[in-house]
Image 1 (cartoon, rainbow, N blue to C red):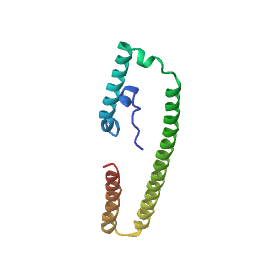
Image 2: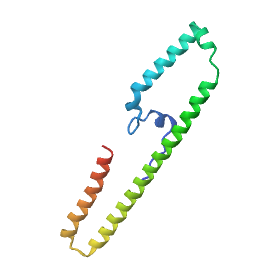
Image 3: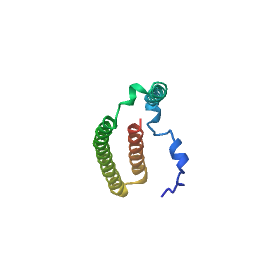
Length: 128
């Protein structure tokens, strides 16, 4: 079994491999610019935004939380289904390896290497 060191908080927050941050960086910058613009507008001209209460923000927050809950459940369902399928593949590969135990080494080795290659190729394909 491979045992790796547990990453610290800084390593987790700055990890880019496998992260979605590079894909959404442009949208985050646009949102940050709009937010800075809204804050500067409120500081320079407080009258247009002074009459806004908490109700619009509460409704938007409620709608976003419901949307994110459904999206999170859908993502977890997809992950769980993939985990089950990968587990079945591993079980089938182990069963195949046990069944080839009766073959000669020169016949068995290419079969098992092909099986390992298939598993690694599938993992690489699924990860792009």
